[in-house]
Length: 345
Image (cartoon, rainbow, N blue to C red; front, top):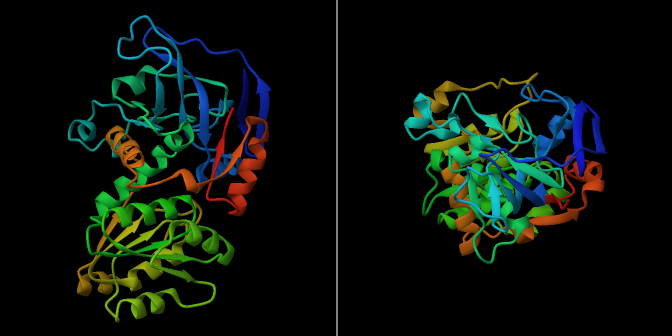
C-alpha cells in the first residue's frame, strides 16, 4: 500500500509498504479520509517526543472496515467508522473517575501506532478496549466524520469553560479549531466574536462560520473592541485557539467579572510562559482552565452533533487532496490558506 511515513523533521516520505494484517483482536480499515491539522505541521517540522520513526502520520481518520480479527464480535466488514486519535488506558485513576481526556498513559494514532496517511489502517485493540471505534451516523460523509476528532477536543474545551446559553464568547484564532469553537459556542446558545491577526484568514473563516463580530487584531486593539461590543463589561468566556502567548495575555484583559478563560492552544516549547497579572484574576474572580484532547465519549458526541446539524462541518473542508499531495496539504495548513484540508488515500 501507499503511505506517507515520517522519518525525521522535514523528512516525510511517500513510499510503498506491505499491507498490514489485523491481529485476532483488531480490525483493519480502508482509509477514506484522514484530515490534517496544525499538529501535523508541527510533527513535520520538529518531530514529536512520542514518535519513534519511521511512523505513518495522520490521526483524524474515517473509513470502512475491510477485515476483522477472529476475536472481534462487535464489528463486520463494510461498517463505516471513525477512529479516536487519543487512546486512554481505561484503567488508571483518571480513567476510572471518568476523566479519560487526561489519562497519563494515553497513546495516540499516528504517534504510537501507524496513522491514516495510508490506504489501510489497523485499529489496535487499545482503541477497541475503550470503545473508541465509532459507527458513522447515516447521512454523515467520511470527510465530515474525520472532523469529529478535532470537534471532540473543542467539546471538551467548552465543557471545561462552561460555555452556555446567553454567554458572550470570544474565540481568538480563526483556524479550523477556532471555526469549530465558533460553531459549537453558537450551538450552545452563545453570542460569539472571532479575533484573528491575519486579515485574509479572518475573512475566509468569517465568511464561513459567520461570527457575531470579526475582529482583525492587526488593525484594531482586540481588547478594546471586545469591551466596546459588551458595553465595557467584557466577555463571559475567552478561548485562545492559537499558539500565542500574547493572545493568552490579552484574554485576561478581555474577560469580564467571573469570566472563564480557556488556554486551548498550547504554546511553543521554547516559549511556554506568559506574564499574568494575578490581581486581575483575584479581583475579577476569573477562572483559567486548560484544555488538552478529548475522550472517546467526546468523539461520539461530536459525531452526533455533526449528524444532527448542530455543528455543521462539511463547509469547513476547503481542500480535498490525494495522498500523493500530502506535502502540499501540510504546506497549505502551514500557510493558513485553508480551513480544513482532508487527505483521501
